[in-house]
Image 1 (tube, rainbow, N blue to C red):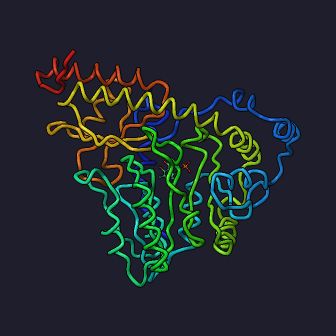
Image 2: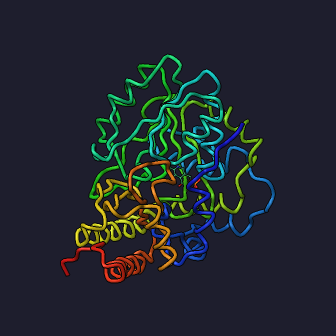
Image 3: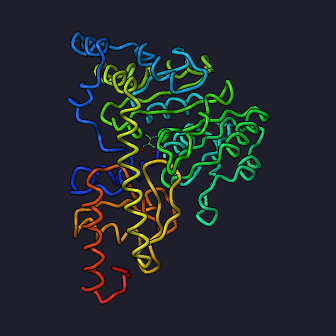
Length: 384
Ligand SMILES: Cc1ncc(COP(=O)(O)O)c(C=O)c1O
């Protein structure tokens, strides 16, 4: 298997720990360990204190799988398989699901492993392009028309990274019904689920739509615990989960034991955890909306409907790659150019999950001001 470099991860490897402000992170500001432990109940506090640092159970700690199952409508503990991050779940699942002669349809632009692992496993991959002119919406009719006899999986990331797209419940069910009717498995990457904006409800989880469908989840994004590296697959297709567990024997075998206990703590306190994440993201969403409204000559965006990222387009005359390079150099503020997704538009990803977002915006503002003044160009247009 030959994998192309993961462009976004290579970009983060270069910059993530070298800059002052990550204005493009997709996770929500991580919980301090002590504050998370303060949420433990008697059972999880004892499990933490008495933890033996041996190997953990391959499918995942039963209590953790039970708590994850509760995020779905009709799933049990055995319908969940724990991984080290959603990334490992994607890697194992796509290797198990597709190979030479198979076809997969994957939403794009998007998280590279969702299409690259399928391609490297030998599948023919069609990218379902989300278009800014359509409000980045999922075009269910176009997507379903791309299904072929060899199609094994439709892989949809909802809420979507990097656009913040969220289909309507009706669109989502139509897609699910069409996949089920065609005998095609829907794989729903739902790592941004529970971060819906403006009062929208979470979509029904993919795994709840049909017995063969699979949901991918993680504690990194909405649950603000990326450092735990706890992800999962959820599906009523236990045969598929068993094949993925067998594949995992060649990757990590089992998750990190301390992370599993902390994951149980977090999921039992999920309302507290999610309320904090939603508060951070929604405040930053309003801030960025106002920032753009005051600076139409900088960028415009389709306001994200869900998730912790958005994908504004820089004004003509500001090249996204160059702009990001100059901004990080001058102000230590990191934006992610759309080229990291292989996307040719002039977009950058903005992350809405960090607590230093207001400061990062101030630095971005100073950078825009300096360009206007220093270079005599109207890079900004401000009403105040
Ligand atoms: C859509 C999507 N899926 C999966 C992942 C992987 O999550 P993790 O790094 O926590 O494994 C990411 C991370 O950015 C993502 O955006």
